[in-house]
Length: 404
Image (spheres, rainbow, N blue to C red):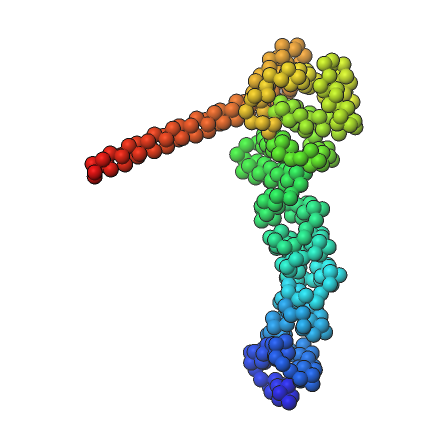
């Protein structure tokens, strides 16, 4: 009887009042103790209201039913096929959808629907993969910010590939602890390319200089990433570097001069198509005949061999292990030794190598100076703090004595 009166009234009521009444009817269906007949009548009324010309009415229906597992499935699926602003709350909340429904909504729905799906709690991996593959940048951002979403590593890589040039996407990607080293490197490369293009476009420095600075910054980040990553991640990073054409002699020499043996030996193994154990044996061996053959098999420029040879000899002697910076920074004394050796060579083709070593030496000197100044400032601060604490204790003791 109540539903019959509602249907008679709703035909002539204003849209706003119809929306309010529709929301009340939907909540009554979900939470009131209705008889079987009234419940069936209420469901029929809601199905009839799907044809209401007012979007407010259908949106009220969606808001009231979206999160409930007891909502009529026919109503939910009809609302999901409605306008994006009506379908969005249903796709964001309804537990009635299976993974296939959500994947189809991502593939065929509007941007608002994709965003709604990406915001779902406990989003399954298959749906996250669909968003990563075809979702808009906004949907991918919402997915990355969804702490409950199950996102596979390959989906993270796909988002980085599609939208890594956007700062809004790049920042949450780089903040992820589960981001693969290769993906992190790819994002840094995109950023450096954008910055190089920006400064060159502003004519602050010429394009070639900007590209060189960006390339060397990427190489520096690469060595640091490798130093912080597990060996399995380093192997993937090396493979990514080779596929992207970034596994150069300059990068490999930087790794060696930083004491990053894992990256250095892994890079040679990748280029020479040998096992890392075999390369490690040749590098640590006392003779240089096997090392020269390995160098040639890896296809590195012949002109760089003297620098590699001298650096490996210094590494074998172990005289530079105490230098600061770990395996992420260039070692100043090792570079100076290599530079002195190469400058004594009388080969004109060594000129580019010597120029590179001079840049390495300058970078290492500046890094060493920064570390020294940081340590000095810290020591001075600690000493001043200790002196202040002693003076405070003396003052408190004197105050107590006067009071007594």
